[in-house]
Amino acid sequence: MSVKNRIEKLGRAGKSLSISFISQIVTSVISLVMVPLLIQYLNKDMYGLWVTLISLVSWILASDFGIGYGFRNRVTEFLADQDKEKLNGYFKNTFQYYLIITVAITIFFVYTLFNNPILSNYKTLSLIIYIPYIIYFPFSVSNQVLQGLRFVHYTAIINLLRAVLWAAFVFVIINMDDEGNLRHIAIGYSVVNSIVNGVCVYIAFTKSTIEVPSIKELWTKPVIDSTLVTGAKFFVLQISTLLLFSMGNYYVYSNLTPTDTAHYDTINKMYNLYMTFFNMIISVFWSEIVFQKTTGNFVKLRQTYKRLLLISLFVSSGAFAIMFVAPFFISIWTNNRITINMQDCLPFSFMVSIQSIAYAGAVFMNAFERVMPQVILAILNIMLIYPLIKLGFNHNTGLGTVPLVSGILSIPALIICHRMALHLTRPNRVEA
Image (tube, rainbow, N blue to C red; front, side, top):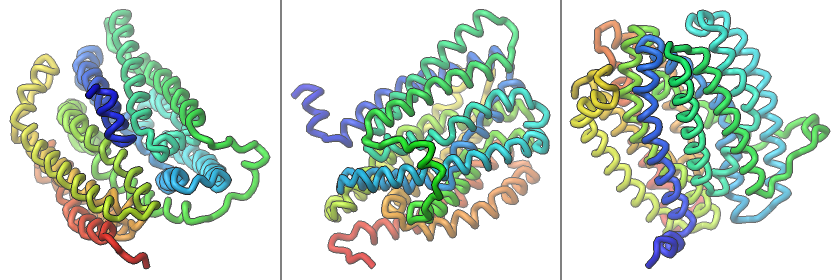
């Protein structure tokens, strides 16, 4: 049987995963190559500042108050009911809220630019990095369109394009400029991302049947519907996830040194690359779960749950295997500029292990939009994360502080999400 026939036999989910994995492998290799080049070009202190600044970009993209996740589910449901008019209505409403949020983001960014100690000290760099993303924000709904249409492989290919263009720019700037110039790096970063984000928007609207609303339609009052209410819940989950898993560079930079931040980022980047493949699986399964739920195929849903749980256990075990090879790999990877040991990696392995198993249950709650138990836990995590991290740094727990605290706070979610997933996927379950 040919490769093409095998992929066709797997169906859309198999095809999406196959293409996504190939694209992600190449993207990961390129990303790994970029780290030592940037460290060499910028030096460890400037690199620590750089990764701290770009880590805050995730706050802009997550500022949709969760509306995008609700809209993503609506797009997938459209594949089952084919109600084009309803889909266009959902899109118009979602895009209107994205525009309103863009205004709020802009106001908050201006305030932060003059009050956050890191951004205020590097205003020009902050403007170069964040302004293009603020402009792109209302159009970032295109990512949800592609994933809702079960075209996750398109997002993987787009990310591959992003990595290739970024690598090309870095190679050019290194050969043209011997001294590390962070402003040049920031300009190239923004230009590359603006180009790729434009490509993403074009593909999303080309592949979908969504009609772009007119300016007159956008001025009408948006409707408060179930998508907005669900989005508010997802927003709390997004904030919690960002604080637990995406703010490590900022925490370390604020409490230790830029060099420590470079060490933390290198270890974290290695584990993030590992989790990227699992997150890709989660994205593909999410759309499949919504589709199976909408068509009422609960027997298939239980099979999907068992399959995903098995995958997550495998990923969890692999997280601990990484720490045995990470010190040697990072030393070779960074040309001995970054040296770590197994003890440094253990908290990261613990965090990723808990995180991967928890995600396997949480994706069912997200697909069914039964997220209130997660929301309650997320609020508690938001309240506890920084005090616990601060406590850890005060007791000299070092680079492992952030992943250790994040892993511990994720344990209750792991338990609750799987109990709910078992309930939601029960065959012949009667909806309340």
